[in-house]
Image (cartoon, rainbow, N blue to C red):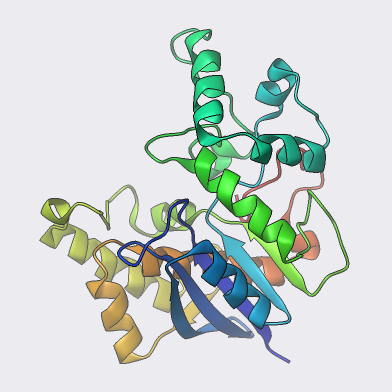
Length: 269
């Protein structure tokens, strides 16, 4: 039976204008068919959408863990579940103040603590609270995943039919089109160059030109919708979908043997 797959472009503060976008798909061999896109304007809508499907493998564009160096410096619990309990009990203002104090105490060039997966993935440190505010995405997203509940490989292993993996669309996008920008929330920056980059990225996904060895299958209407989405939210969800599809083919979901059980790992990094 084909695996039910999911990619999620997450937001720490979703709205009707900027919703969380889900890309649902099925894999048959090396072909991943996009079954549909779903927008959730509230986190409660997202939770309902995730609970409506009994089994899936999903790639979520939000960090699942904090850098071990940061956690140890702050004296927070080094068990992942206990650390997340503490972290998610804090307000965003408290998180901002705590992380700002940490960076203020650090030398220029190493202000932020990093996870082991940041370098190979090219991702922002999970403690960043601005541009992008991934720390707040984790603060909002991890409690949702734990409430499902879901298996969180490398962090909280459970024999459950829903498998949630940390994904990062920028990792796959850079492999396919380099450092070209393909999206912007700022209407003034939604340029013809970014439109062309989206078209090139979608073409590369359809042709399976990445090391993942997978190709996406789109209808004409789906392709047009991804091209026309200048914010790139739907396309990012599809990129996460492809990372989840890759993980569904790999032993241990493609995670390295030495993954840090506090930090977690970005799938396919």
